[in-house]
Image (cartoon, rainbow, N blue to C red):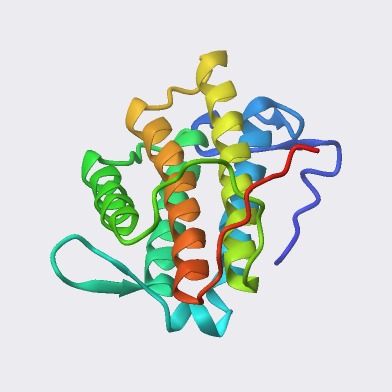
Amino acid sequence: MLYTGKGDKGTTKTFGECDQRISKSSAVAEALGTLDEINSFLGVVKMKPRSREITVPRGDGMRSKIVDVVSQAQQNLFIVQAEVAGADKHITLEKISELEVIINATELELPPIKTFFVSGGTELGALLDVARTFARRAERRVVAVSEEGKVPVGKDTLAYLNRLSSLLYAMARQVNHKSGITEEPPTYW
């Protein structure tokens, strides 16, 4: 059954709450919803044909298709969601390191950053930029849960979410660069 009706009064249940229900407007529910948003939007990113063509370096001399990197990020976001919901699931340092390797290797292939850039360039680049902003919002919401202290959130989880937005930024830049797009700085006028 796709519905139970138990949430009709504005409450929901998570892993760690046993039979207790929490408000759908709580910090935990807000964080879970925002993590769901970024995960769903990454599904849109994966459906773009260019995500199956353009690759990023893995740091070991090999390359991965953006679609595969995004798929792994989606799996990792389920771990984050489970942790925020109170389950005994946690992001590992290895998962953070995997992102850092891709980010660092990708950065070596790109022109150095000297300014902010206006989002856009290519459709896939713009979608990755939107995903980056969703990831930043999810990070802020999970930080709020951590600061509230009702649900323990590991420091590695917070670090992973921070790196995820950097990864999405690096991939947006890579997509535009591989497509021959020159990054457009803001004019501030």
